Image (cartoon, rainbow, N blue to C red; front, side, top):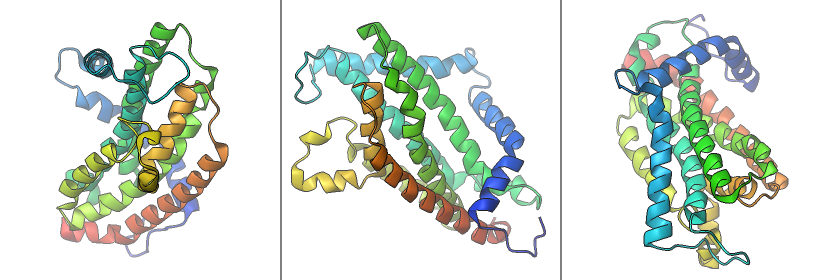
Length: 277
């Protein structure tokens, strides 16, 4: 890449960059995942034990201690249903929060890449997303295994879960490009975004059904980008219903716009990274 030429910002250039650097992204994602557990005795096994342990804790606390139920239902809820429904929301939020919380420090923690003119810095948020998707996939496997264990079956609609998650992946990448850039110039962004993602956890229907929110306040909850994905994920994973394709299509259009704006912002500001760092 010629440093005197403005980096491309079109969606086509983004697609070309991701395809051209697909092997680099794969290798860096693998290194990211393995490196997280390097030095531990059980290594990658921790990626399985963590979600299993958390699911057991949620089941005990909400099903046994609080005896919680997920809203009004015409069917008798099992003691573990609340924990499983809750776990779906936590998987979705965990993917979103992990990428965004890491985004402001991606460039700062990879200064050696900034100095290399030929290195495609735009792939760093994609690598972070790849690592987050790996852990989310492990959590999903644990969720489905628990659902099958408690119910004796898995809904066939689970095949649509990747399509439900795709719009969230796209919009999260767009936000990650923006935050990765801002994190270079404003070091407080990292502290701020962690607070925001925590607030978004409680302002989304993770611990409660959307029907429990007063009608006049539901628009606030629906404005949370996690709400639609969490609700649709539960439709296909827990309730065995098809997702709302119209809603997901509209969400995808918005997500693509955010992703393009985020990528364009990152490309426009990347020339100043070396000067600040």
